[in-house]
Length: 178
Image (cartoon, rainbow, N blue to C red):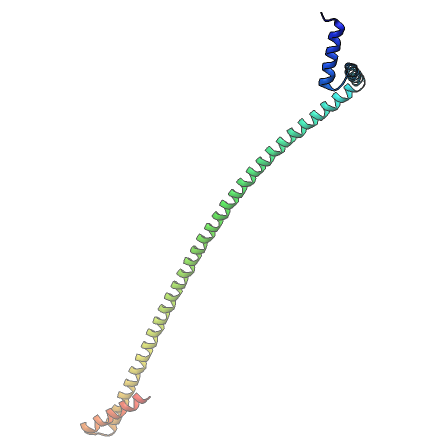
């Protein structure tokens, strides 16, 4: 039977071949690592965990503030979009009201112009009628004056019917020239 020494030496040879290091080197390495972990645990672990906790809290705060800023930005964007649509609708209403007021003013101006034109036409017709009456009155006066003049001439000269006709035609022609 193999002894324990033979077994140990076989394990040692297998580990050295597989790992490329002796068992003693491995034991030293494991011990050094364990000592290093103990040193870190006693002297630096609280500082490292405090730093990591602080870093975690800071990242969570940044994430929370980023989410909050994103929500505020979305709310502001929605508010701005709503205000834009409201302003667009108001400007459309203002333009429509201005167009309607313009049409109403145009209708009023056109109506006033038509009324003024009618008044001018009526006034012109009245003036023409007055002038016509004046002209007729002047013609009647001329005819009366002419008849009186002719009567005077007839009485002064007792003329015959032929002379009377010649005189009447002559006077009418001279009055038409005037």
